Image 1 (cartoon, one colour):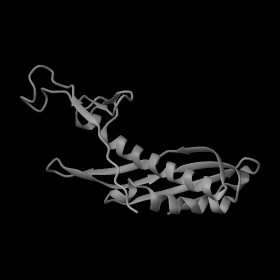
Image 2: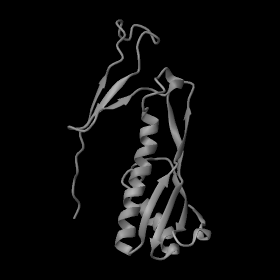
Image 3: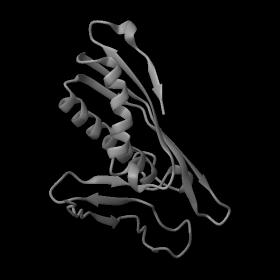
Length: 166
């Protein structure tokens, strides 16, 4: 049975420096992102596009969404399969290319999850990344490839580290 889920956020531009968008350099790219009563996220453009490097940019948030979606699907699958995850860290990266007309698109995102388990089959822990990718709502929604190069360590056997690219 399919179910529909709706998400609502508010994005508000806070970069009017007094002249609006009179010229390309007359306005800031700063904005806020709100979702209900959650803490406000401070956003801007990438510094390459006149943004504030101390704020999150949409490109970083897209990569973060892919990473966190994969992680949540993976943790669920591990819990169901009896694989006890005690640590999960990802250093995801994405590649975006711009066009001369000012547009652009992501070409790929690669996740690099590093997982530590203290129970369960390490081979199964590695293979569950494939199913987590398949189940990730965000990865299923983008038109560019999302890969993963995972490592899994066992708490009692750190020599068991192996990469599983996909």
